Length: 379
Image (tube, rainbow, N blue to C red; front, side, top):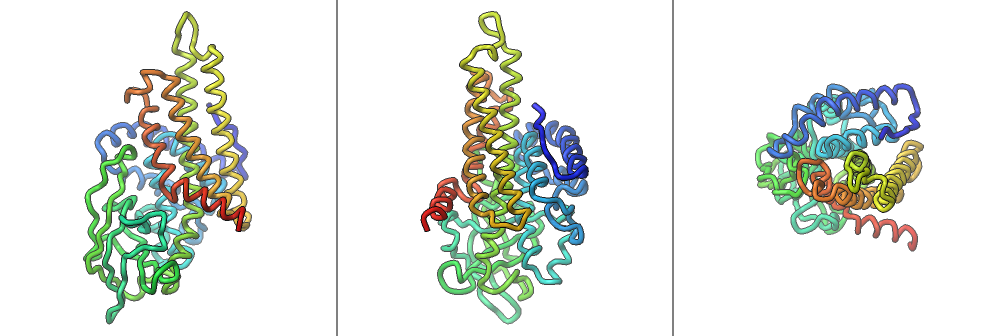
């Protein structure tokens, strides 16, 4: 179905039209092939970047498109409905641009036009093998030397590992806890930065994460982003916005599942009539569609708070929690609508079901979102 959207400007309508055109031509036609081969779609991301879709929420003066989050997230939703790996890549890249945009030095910010134009792809290195949710306990260490810093440690579950051109690396420069963490910017060809083999994942096989091993990696002093020991605040600021991106991906994936299931139910006949006419299945479709609309409304409400400059982190947690749980449920129900046909890869709902699961985990598990929300109610 066509989603009835209320957008703030005519330019935003044109942008969504462009996104749908690119998604149909570049994404829908290639998703199955790239996912089957497990090949990263770097050239497709360059095409999106050159079309202005990789820097949407950043100011035009820095090379972005100057779009509000309300619009950017609906672009992500549209991309996700055609190929989740691309939408997730755009979301992660947007996240990876944030440290330099918000806290970078004048010299670091000179790279923003290439970052936001998609010529330079970014990665965000926070999680580690021994802990993802407890980010403040990270152990990757940066030690001062005569000209800068030497980093040793391992980062885990890094989207764009081995594909990115620049890496934001969160590491310990001080004592224990959040107050001892800094952010370092490193180019992909920095000696001592070693991407490992991609993980064998359930879904998103064209953009599988990998570990990054830092073995005596040296960066000059001017590669510190923001203040020394101020990296944890940068990480959390970026994640608030990143959770909105993942929620938008979830809404797009779920909407695609609803649309495919409804179309199938109108065509598939049993007992002499379309299965959509059976109340049990019709009610299932109705619930699916309602849940997706509710997730979209929650997401856009949080985005409008962010655009208005108001606190939005709790609403972002709610949106991420609800939208990703909805995506998991709706893709599960879509398989049920299709029956046996939904269990085979001839129909995309099988892939969407596998992909939905990761959205409940990345950018903070849904258990962490519940913790964030509950603490806001009781502190």
